[in-house]
Image 1 (spheres, rainbow, N blue to C red):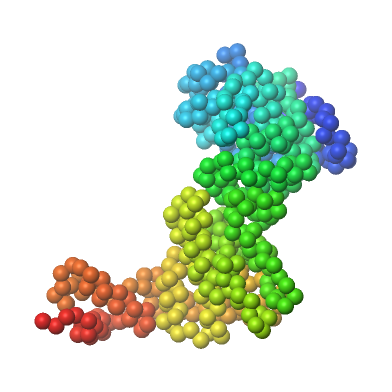
Image 2: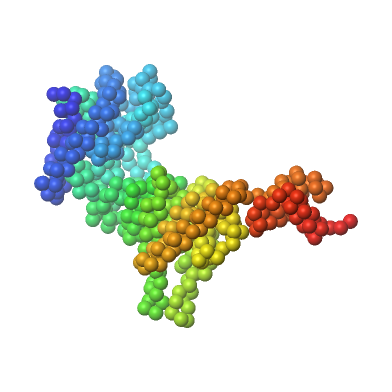
Length: 508
């Protein structure tokens, strides 16, 4: 049998599963055919490296399997250059086998049985079979090395990640598909289920609940009813997980193809109450007398619309700002006597809440600052009216946004969710006008670097000042003049500085 034929037979050799009985025969057959084709293409691409590595393990008397997410992604036709393997070899033996083959080897995960390596631009992680036990207090397992691949697969988070392919791929006898928990059938249903009961799985590692939401976002999966029920009942267990790990999973969720679906799952199951409680808090009660837009649903729509405006890569800062831009509304809601509802200064309150929440999740300072500033500025445009802003106001808008201006453009446009087509068109045209004015002023002035026309050294020389607070005051005054009037000539700037000095500096 050729290598291609061996690979195409992988899914056929999958053992029957009770779970598979829930999948209609026609759809299951169609899925298996597609999965076999995907797997053949993806595994053939990595076969030279995988088989080379497997030959070294075989020569040393050990088995090697491609496992977990790598097998799932191969079946989905999206296998990357990060490959996961499992083996009966112990970590010291793995390290010895990799010596002289890998371009680089690292052992940061060796306490958990994992040795990492790179070869020809491909990153590999090889882990000894494990049969872990958990203390159910933290998520840290008591690492126990196992003896079989089936036992290793039993500890995996979801059945779609509990599949393996024995290597080498080019050996028809060895290249078999191992699927003891119905992962292929679950993949056909696009469903997340667990090898053990979900209660056992989530108790072992509560981060798996957030990973479920992440896979919903990334891969378009749904949750098996028992998994969804367990998630709702056990959501509070996520508090056992360090905030750094929670933030890492949340970021992956938000950067997925459909973050709205992941966020909705978190909110509906109660998980968001422990991760981003400000998001479910936006589900404000609406009564018949005080009508207003559903802030939660509006925010999810803004998230969708902001994603549609992204240029190339997913933008975490923009997506966080879109999701959180209105989190200040619950705290600022006022029911007006005329039946209306107001949220005065919710952008100010929202920016503070953003800082508090993202700092609690230990996001990097630049992410916290950027998201908070976007939330703070997202309403500024609504003062533009029909174009009444002066050029000074436009300069301030650009200056306050700084490097965030392209993202602010996207956020403001995404924030228009009205169903009134005429109103939506008018808002978009008005923002078009603002962007044209920005470009006109940018062409006339250096808007990318709005700064005083005299620097600190020139200020000290002209006024005879030593370094100190007065120089900073003079600099800030000239910046305000620059924003109001546009660029000044050298003579105009010096005259303005002397005028300021006459008024502000103490007379001798």
